[in-house]
Amino acid sequence: MGHNAPDKGERNDVKNRLMVALDVPGQDDAITMAQRLAGNVGWFKIGLRLFVASGPELVRKILQTHHVFLDLKFHDIPNTVAEAIVSAGNLGVHMTNIHAAGGPEMMRAAAHAANDFPNMKLIAVTVLTSDPMPPAKARETAVQRAEQSQKAGLDGVVCSVHEVAAIKQACGDDFLTVTPGIRWGNQSTDDQQRIADPAAAISAGADYLVVGRPILRADDPATAAREAVAMMSASTPPIAIRQ
Ligand code: C5P
Image (cartoon, rainbow, N blue to C red; front, side, top):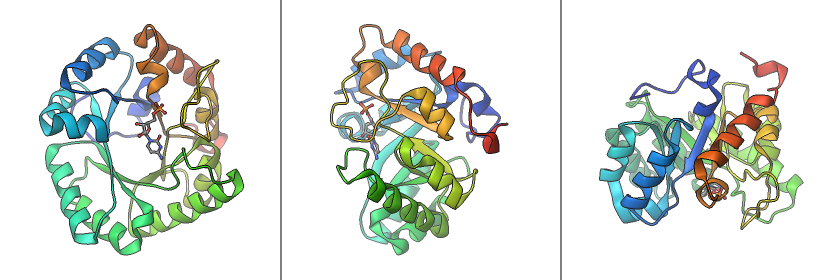
């Protein structure tokens, strides 16, 4: 671990493809949860709730032991977004994101700013996994936004497992797909609409899986994380992207 860019070799260890969303109220809960899960996951995702509460100081702490995906979904005028990307790069996070709905000019400005930070991947949100749009429409929109993101110079997208294969077909295997909406067993879907289990995500070709509540709310989060990793390990990736 540390500050190197995540690469394909690192992803051979499947736990380095699991990102746990630290959607907890503040720094103390975040550190406690990170310690409980340490060794079972390679990444933590820091999103709006935690970043608004605890900010860059907490990000730096988590970066001492894990890769960090700073999930703030920037969506503003091109210059403001580009400046936010520079701030994320200076913080040392390994991945951050913007909304593809912000348009091509904003995405190009963000990608240009990210060029100065080769250890940081920049990805775009296509269609939120909570969006109730019909699956076929979601897939079509996600592919369009993925193509626009790639053209603008981004490294990949956030999408549901159900859109991964179509996006890989349109943009190629090296274009990253990061998939939230992961549920298994009898877990509640909560507000997610387009869900899939960890094995299905790997066999669809997802590069990284984002899991929040199924791990955070489990009686034993470390056991739940190991369960997810075991399902990921038992699954077979599509032939085209086996390493
Ligand atoms: O608790 P759950 O597993 O549903 O958490 C999913 C996480 O992924 C949340 O932190 C949410 O903000 C994030 N996310 C998402 N859909 C997107 C992008 C991010 O659910 N399109």
